[in-house]
Amino acid sequence: MTPRFSLSIFGMNVHSENKKTFVPQAASHRHASSRPAPPARKGRPKAAEAEARLLAAALDLFEEQGYEATAVPDIARKAGVGVGTLYRYFANKEALVNALFQRWKGEFNARVLAPLPEGTGVKQAFELYWARAVDWLLGFPREARFIDLHFHAPYLDAASLAYEEPYKRAIEDFVVWGTREGVLRPLDPVVFAALFWGPLAGLLKFAEGRPLEPAHLNEMRAALWRALSVSDT
Image (cartoon, rainbow, N blue to C red):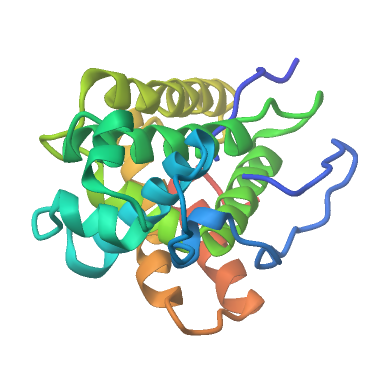
């Protein structure tokens, strides 16, 4: 029986009998927070709208000029609200960056760490994880870069760090399963996680403003599988 766990992405209806290689396509939509913050409106924005605008503005500024260089008034100004409004929703800049991290790491977990279809083999599971991960990274590149950049940052609180636990458990379960089946090399889960995420982190940097050929993505996946597996079959 296939273990009910996962690693990493979304937009696929997967059936265990489908053995074809999935070539990820860039998502055709973007979350509102990955777009420039909307212009300020007259009057006081509604609570949900104000919070969304603040999160969108913070994401923009943290990427454009970095967390340390971004001041609270900068975020409020870009969101089109007063500083007092910002403090009604977030105690400080750290609260904002933690809210962003939890939102997008939670989104990653929800879409990526979905249960495997019944009967999925180890290699097919790896291919599904890889395809989903690439799909999510191409669909939400700014959010993915934000997660990668701020991971292990000293200003992340315990609640934010807890969002990494599902990924760690999924990696451990997958390594134990694959090793027991004689398919994966007996690697430490930490090493496995680094080997899996390393190419994806490189993809984040390489993909910015550049087209990615499906053949290149497939080559990257195949090379990673050769590094992780006992054989290439």
